[in-house]
Amino acid sequence: QKFSAPLGRLQSACPRDVERVWKGLSAAEECVARGTALWTPSEDDEAIFVTRAMGCKDLKVPTPLLAAGLVAECIELEPGCQIGIAMLPDGLSSVSEADVAGELARHAPSRPRAAALRLALRGQNSGQQESAAAVCAYLDWDLGPNTGAYGAMKRARTAKPERVRISHILLRWAGQKGGDEFGRRGFPAPTRTQAEAEKELLELLEQLLSEDPKTMGARFKAQVMKRSECSTALNVPYADLGWIEPGGAEAPLEAAAFAMAVGGLSDVVISSRGAHLMYRLA
Image (cartoon, rainbow, N blue to C red; front, top):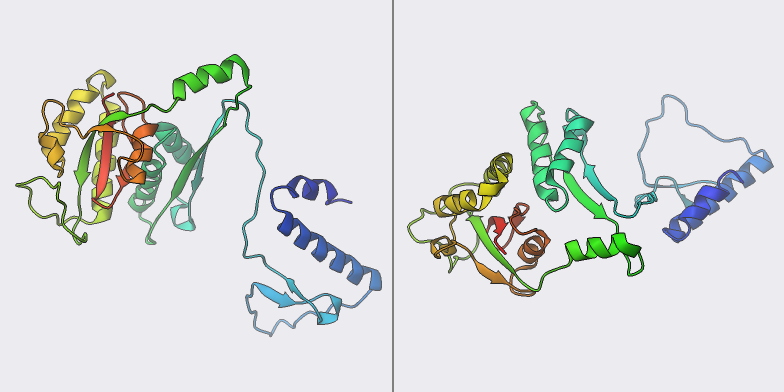
């Protein structure tokens, strides 16, 4: 009875996991009711870590001891609410919750890779010896057709355009397979790694965000002409890629391009050509 209510709430989300829990509880209840003395190893025995073990019901039926599957937790979102999620390993234990919250807020709602990169770099800068990595994501409330005036206002504000005009900075790295037919002439072959390319774009993104947003377009164009290894940096007058329509670019580039507001900056995006930072002109 103690577990009926919480398991009932998880039934629709993960029915198989709930079924396994009920079987485990039933087996435990049967053992307690029979009064069977449980065997325990001596302190001299060596422990073995396993994901499955024989147990319960007189050791005749294998019962999962430790689940290797996902654990689900249900969180109720309020209308218009957005949640940022960061998953950090033990190697980033020195990064505080305030730092995590700050990076998620700075790069919301569409730059999760930038937030994850900065958190990973914070861990490395703190002197951690282990390799550091982080995963970030943003969850938004999906407003249906019958959500009143608030829903209508948000849909109008976030409606996906038919096409977007984009300028971008492309950085390639050493060892990439195949040539780039749209590569910018006169640039030496890259010697940087992918990690170095992403870090360079992250630092440029943070620099651009820290200055006057009214001059963002001019400052981004100057960086395109200085850094970009794509031939579109020479396009006049905006040094841009031109208009992008659905299906007109690689999926990561298209998703990031359509997620930006006019005058906004994208996440650090990885494609088959290299690492990108984009600015939406229109």
